[in-house]
Picture 1 (tube, rainbow, N blue to C red):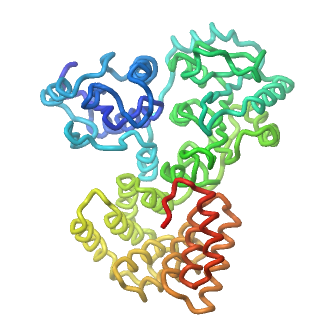
Picture 2: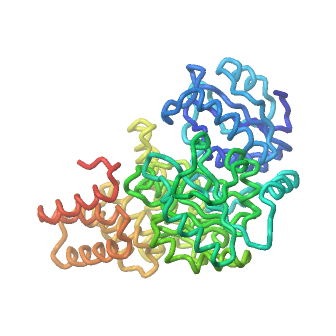
Picture 3: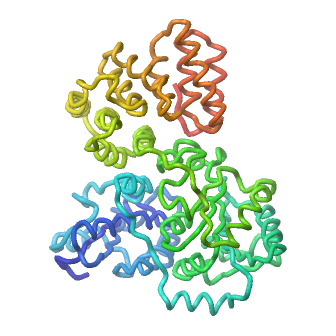
Length: 510
């Protein structure tokens, strides 16, 4: 691997990184870093863990990981026209390459002894988008475009791809539902083509999909998969890894079902929020070409959306999502609450530097993030909190938005300034521009104290309204449970704790 001052070295460390489509987020971040450093190209260095193997958390064998490296990660580099050697290096060899490298290295401050965690997380790209960065997007080359057309032999019908997840966990596609949808699409003059789960290519297709058209070449080869996704007027799927490929495509259009699924850990509220999303919220970036359907892929759900799907396939220029984007401060709070702290801090810094009424919320958010950072010592956390805290302590209630007031209320509560925290919490609750999430946080600040009857009734009503408007969001029931606990209403407290557990079994409640 050559060492060059005009090349960026992107180190992908299998000590704590997966062999999955999440790698695309890492590549996109490396592209951003390349731009910012003025580098001409990227070289990816794959590094094995300390046992010359792969990330143990994925539950795959060494052989399976090596197949994924060869058949998924390396081809994804080729799609982005990024250089890499077709192997993973031992840590000793990798250290020699890194020591001799004279150009920029990504991630910043990479240390092979203590490699940074979560560098592949989607949250980082959300943060880049929220801070005004134009995300890099992939496009298939002419060779792969011609190859896929030779394989599928296009006719007069418009093509829709349906990507399956053939797993034993809670994210398995509903094969009956997709078979019924495919039949409906054919009756409308379209051509549905199924893509299989790459890991399931060694077994027969699901019997429920007997007679359907599959493209095995694209199912096995990410380069051809990308070309088919681009060629399709619409890509449909149950939530799984390739959705990141769709979301980062320059010409792809998609509808994704089943992201929210309490039967599977990654489908619970907390992991979803850690991507910067909220249940029923739009995808932060490229909203016009991609839409999340916050329902599972059941037969009645797919049929309910058939006309919307039909229009999207018939008209490639149709805007799929035109919801108002969420404010960066809302997304930053969500990332902070789910411990995606570097991504949250990047957004908070961006907001802090602005001149709008959200600015104080950026300062408060940095203080709150510092207080939450368990990788730092208690003393270091307190020092950072105080440093940021004194940056906004002079702000008055009238100078901040309702959204920012929620962050200030929590920061003042942590600082032990109860009356001040209640002032900003009330400001947030009363403000028409506050999101439900902001109000829930403000109400949780208020409910930490035993409220008088009037304020208790106000808090109870607002939180119940929030639960009704967003029935899958876990933060509102948590705030209600806290409220009832402080008011000594044991039966109501137990009722809402039970609801919290049903919404997100991954939460550890005390």
